[in-house]
Image (cartoon, rainbow, N blue to C red; front, side):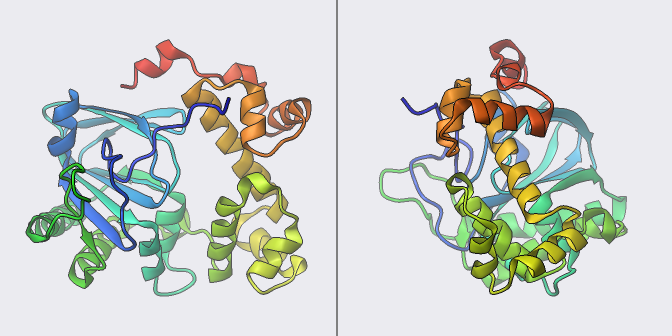
Length: 303
């Protein structure tokens, strides 16, 4: 029996429809969280990046097992695939912006901090001026979003959104760049070469297939030596180390959020030998797989 899946949505609770390419959606924090007693249970988005903009009040965040608090004005960028959940209060105010993964392509140059932030994520306080600008942009996007026809399929939920709307995308880009204002670009800098963005995408697509490095090098039109040089220079690790870290992270997510057995997770991620998987996991995380299996009491505290 396959392990239970981590809940995956286009938008939280909206699992009856598929988001189209170029999808974008924005709503207030209260619009969805108030319907769920101000708690959004851990889940993930497999084809979208999400930006949480907290204008006022508190937000408790769980992100891939880490728990921390934000106090407005603050922001959080959740990269594609990251398991996250929120707990708000009635005093929490702000917006949640969801953007299709292709939005990362709006980066203007290889070293553009916009791509870095959306790829790796980040969080922190927002300066008052930048917060005010981000809020104005979010309000404009809310008005634009609500004017669009529904993207839902017949009989599906009534979430709205836009697809391939140049104005919405321009406003979204301006909002994300407002969050970068005054921040050290090096703090969020990552893949300094577009080929690395393709490498990351290929790793996500073929993660459980355990492809050789030659496969990834050919996919981006280069050699293993060049790929190794690029990842070392811009990401600080070898390609294989990055693949192993991503495998370990996915294994950790499945163990923590689904309660699947180590052998089930091993099979899900393409390990033919559960014992080898256990040794791999211990080497990568310093913990045994059974140490990270889902703890119902602990996870229920995050909503």
